[in-house]
Length: 182
Image 1 (cartoon, rainbow, N blue to C red):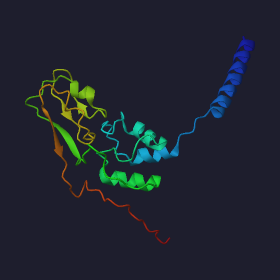
Image 2 (image 1 turned 120 degrees about the vertical axis):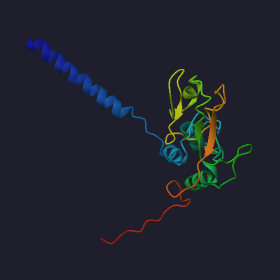
Image 3 (image 1 turned 180 degrees about the horizontal axis):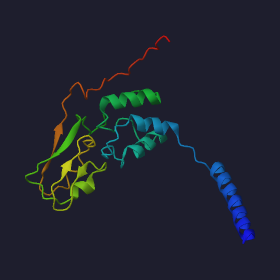
Image 4 (image 1 turned 90 degrees about the vertical axis):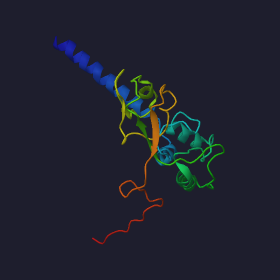
């Protein structure tokens, strides 16, 4: 019995060592440029750029397959930040695309039939509800991508622009932080 345990432990150690070596040897390095581009994009996952989400769009930009001016939710600020990162000239928003103000979806509770089509369309799970029950939007999670509008059969979803207030206003320019004397 002790021999069987020692043999199995030995096999486990050998296989563990082989797997550890293989994981280190075949490790795939992530492209740091893709990570930086993805961090600049607004993460709305809306597909308005022609890609299924922000990460595929970032990968296409890094490979030179897509231009930096295809993201309406990012707007001119996003284009400027991408241009600075990549060392290229900023361009106006791509042809046929319009800059959008930050907005959030709102469901008219009196007309919602609980079909769940909007829940299925939401890429960030910002809609809560069940079949034949009232749905609601979790405003803090909604990215304003508008993907929930088209599948709604009763048009009970509308987009409301989020007004700029002191608690949600973003400074458009980088903040320069000075070192404090210790």
